[in-house]
Image 1: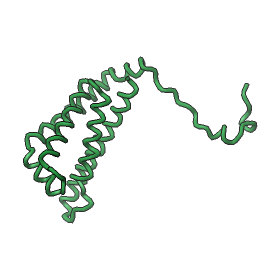
Image 2: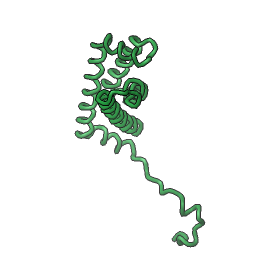
Image 3: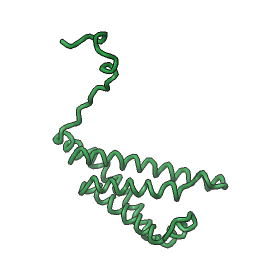
Image 4: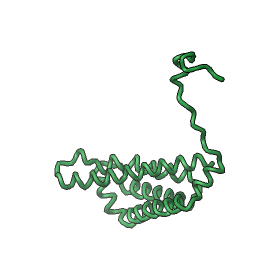
Length: 155
């Protein structure tokens, strides 16, 4: 029998309780569950559509990026959307999932604050549209981070 709470030193009582990391088999079951597979398919599909749309409209996207001050806007636009497409395919098929989720997260971290800088726009309607796009991207970034953790646990 261990010491009572009064007998423990203060630092011992303040130690966080360790939460066991699931074993690989449990992580594998989670990653291959129907809900997670469907989530990967839906998430990857949305990212894939965004990437293909960005590549199909690269010239217009590059003009917008140039207006936002992005250096080498056409190259940056194409590269960013290829990165997003690779991540979308990787997450959907769960191939190189850590790299795939990292590329998606990198896309959103790099693009979101530069392209959807709603705080610097004077027109209220345009600022609101950019804020919605910003928040959508933040949500998609959050999902990428969840998939990154799932990938880490399944490796």
